[in-house]
Image 1 (tube, rainbow, N blue to C red):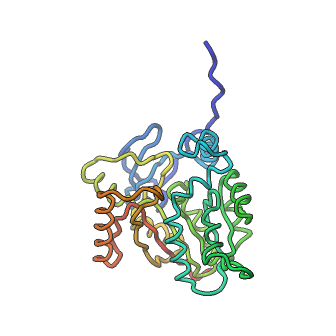
Image 2 (cartoon, rainbow, N blue to C red):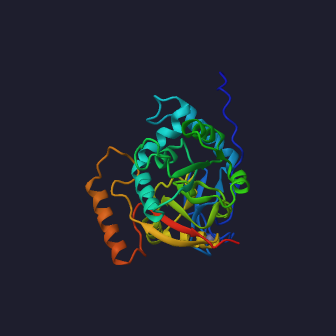
Image 3 (tube, helix red, strand yellow):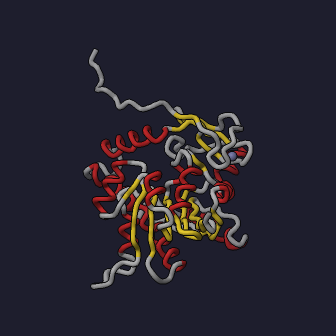
Length: 312
Ligand SMILES: [Zn+2]
């Protein structure tokens, strides 16, 4: 029999406690996707995947995705995979950058994007007001990544320094006015540890902006009907709702500072116009958010702002 080509060796999955509160008390398996299982924390109600790839497994997995490019980026070189994958998020980047500029109206902004992929958000931050001859950008940009490929792609595309989280935590203490985590925290094995590192990188009272999928409707329906949709449990391992995200951030020393409206067009594509169902959901979610003074957020994604504590 012909031998198959040697497959990439993936390290075994790693077991973990609740990523929001640290508790080991959890429900049985709520749903299963391949080797990944969804559970709920009995203490804080956080939904999460309890056996995860771990950092070494993730790096191998992302590298395999960039090499194989079985999606619409297959015509590109692997070196541009990260950048190409960010383009669908330009609407999100626009709304987050507008929020930052409105919040910090003057002066330079030291800006760090975590999980910076190909560096598109960092590039956008440098071209915020268009190009003006002789005027330097307001934003000084840096990146953080766990992935060596992502790191070298961002360094090449943006020309800015990119460090691993633990390196950044010791080298950039108290440097940043703003840190962003765009579609990153749902992938992180130990979000509490990462948030602690980011709090150290921020100036006291600095701004942290997070965008993650909002699992409010999924969580409610799953609890009532015991029916769970496909959640990509291997990739998305932390399934936040606004309250579990707030609780995690408060535990890590942050103060909630605002909730942005969900995007009308979502973050899936720049060319697809929203269908009737998406439009109805957006209208409904907007009405609920306004009626509850921003307390109830039902958009498919949630974009949340926090302030670092007053510092130690
Ligand atoms: Zn918990």
